[in-house]
Length: 309
Image (tube, rainbow, N blue to C red; front, side, top):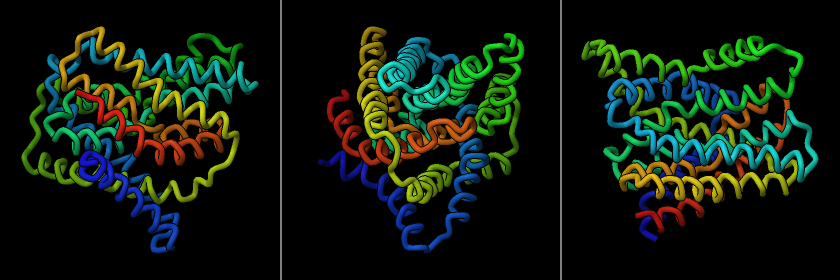
């Protein structure tokens, strides 16, 4: 019960505050959209820039950690993709969008916030290692799969061009890359700039959670609830179970093990809806999944926190 009260509820109260603010018309939908855009295209990229620029690259980029997490993520994507197509008869493009929902955990808004509240800010090093390649990995998998099923007549280089173009227009990926360059080349940052980055970073997650709640108000549950149930099971149960198995086999240390499993146990993030909207496929399913799985996540993550070492 202490985990629920001290760790999870504060995070979901912030989400709930954003949800109520729109429901009660305290803030307009446009304002919330702009706030979400600010967090997604500026505040969170700054947070990731800071985390990446300060990360101990040699220590944090543990192949066992990343291999455990991303093997589980890729298998979850395949399960969702094939399940949507062969079990539910969806076309391949819609199946890719559904598979992306199973792939893209909310590692930023929920993963970082809950890990920090559960284990402290010093426990986020493994989270940052996962997050730094999360968006590039997931978008690369999703966009590549979508381009393949959409444009089978295109050449390899045509598909590659589309993938790279979409990725390098993503502010989160750009923030990570800039932080990586500062880190690897040891580029000095003036204290005034560093302080400004810290100020923006400190507000990023809270604003992101609040705006997420406001946006979720508009996601009225609709679509094929059997597919939504499949996505929720894959995202909230299968993915963390796979990561637990792979991380155990890889003998990860306790801190990395916690971060890997907990991050994989997060509900699909808003990026799932953004990806579906990019291609106009399975958008209602993606939107409803974000809402329903985020609510369910309160209880499933409570369970995972209870069994983690």
